[in-house]
Length: 202
Image 1 (cartoon, rainbow, N blue to C red):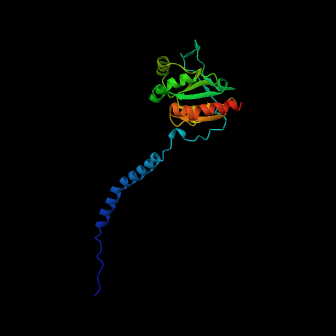
Image 2: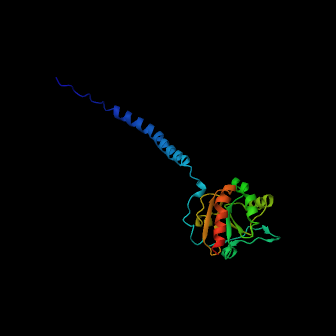
Image 3: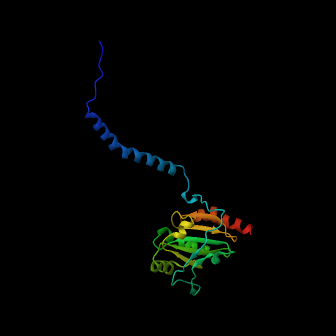
């Protein structure tokens, strides 16, 4: 005696499809969560994102000044190639609305005292009044600041998110990049060795 396989009613298939579509967002979320967790669990420091620009010539700079800003009693110039030519230079990308930039500013002020370094800034997508207030309240570490209201220069420099800093040697080559604010560890293990190496290679 043969047993007949039951035939699904036609209206059962749409019901199953609805279940699949209902579960799809959950499955996508679970997949993304797994990827995110694996990145966190890897212990990788996001500040060490590699930059294709390291070891290459720094992008050209021709940014207008932050009007009203001063440095050592004189109007602070904008940021162009001449401001960093032939000098070991730290280029710091910052904005007044960036909380980590505020936290980092005392460190940048200290770095500006290092006689080996010239410290300049790219003011990223900021309001001039707010940027001036930032420097007035927290201190100005920069010998030159160029404004980048539309973020074009930041794109050229490969900025992921601010603050970011680039060490450019006297030959105009980017030799080090820091994503995020400096701290004691990044100074000791990253920036200071890069400065020493650049100085030794002069």
